[in-house]
Image 1 (tube, each protein chain N blue to C red):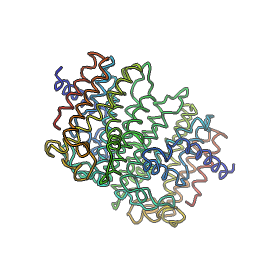
Image 2 (image 1 turned 90 degrees about the vertical axis):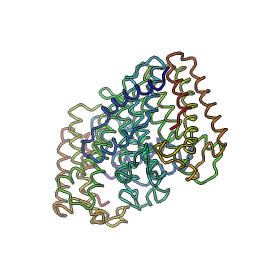
Image 3 (image 1 turned 135 degrees about the vertical axis):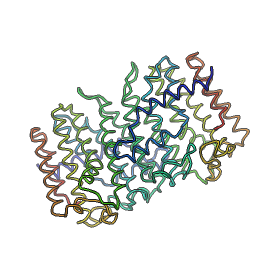
Length: 293
Length: 293
């Protein structure tokens, strides 16, 4: 299959849905809504939404049914970037090739816009229609699990605390699993749940998400070292500068690349039983391994 | 009725439930969970939870049924205080008589602990059992409405933008209605919904919440001017210092006090039809008007 065309089509459908789902910039107070939209529509790859939609289809569900969840996931991802870029966290001026939210709107509004996106994500998720096996509460619990105190936020805390310190490979795997993989796993699980996945299907897709999420972060670490800021659309070399633990720093570049490839193959193997309906997920895994930004 | 005894009993029951509902401090990562608990268990009045429980009973529901929502409301209130106290917002060192979260744990962890409490609130709310008229999604939507981009956060944004500027009485009412009253209204509505309130009951309690929420904030403004930091457990005189618009500043002290009394009477009148079951709500309104901190 042609993954680039697939991705572009999915991205277009998603952009249209997200534009409709997110409050207009003219709503009161305008600064808040402008800030929410500024970061949401800054040219993201839409990885989590596209994984969510592809996972829905991989178990025979409809992408349209998964759409409120896909929008909710992008709201959560975007809020995490806004807060992560704050001076008291990663202190980043550039994101997706544009000045970060706090640079444009000030720190206070950036914090509040992030809070509003997080809150709005749950508002969106509550709109998902229940399927045979899963109720509204199940979607909300999954979303909160992936993004909350035992998921993404746990990873951000350990990442923040680890800056400038010696981090073991085991700790690094924990940070990656929580900070990056947890929300990717939830994206895939939420899509599958909206498609009324069986327990068996959900278990296979969860393993897929875990391996894919780790591979994605290893590749991110490699790109931070090998690409320029212009190529990445965000400040390159930040990890080294912040003395952050990364796979290339701990294992060396060659072993980090081998690990990314191994995790990608592992991911692909875990969902072989889903057959041709999972072809997009298989191709996405391959695509992410080869990406340059 | 003896409102002080009622409040103390309710508060005790709530503290026990909250202690059980919130993740232990020993969970990984410990800093995050310690920070979440530090701010949650710093001796808050528990106004929103107690209003939620009293509202449930005012329509014949059980307090125990409303408890997950009461816990969720306190998580949201606490996250909003943590973020509001940040240097980029109100820049406050003292809250409930203790150093604020960012003073103890640093700004980065304070942002993340707030995010985690907000996320956890939705996890808790998703645990509420549906009643005849209301589904899990209704609770989630109500909680997000009260706290989100058209509720509490809208008020915080306009409040932040208004600092040091001339604010009209109309704008001030907007700030108070959103920043403070919106979550108080949701607390009361959520309690009523968990008690399977009729449309008529819910409408009356919504009006009650709006008037009570505004009264509460007018009194807060008055106390900021008239009480010491020791009495308030937070930095007094902050509004004046930040050149914030307040009722006493705009209307003068006497008219602000008259307005608080008028709003309290209005609140009490709106729920007269609920009869003796609403006696606690009536007494709470009276109690808040007379409070000194």
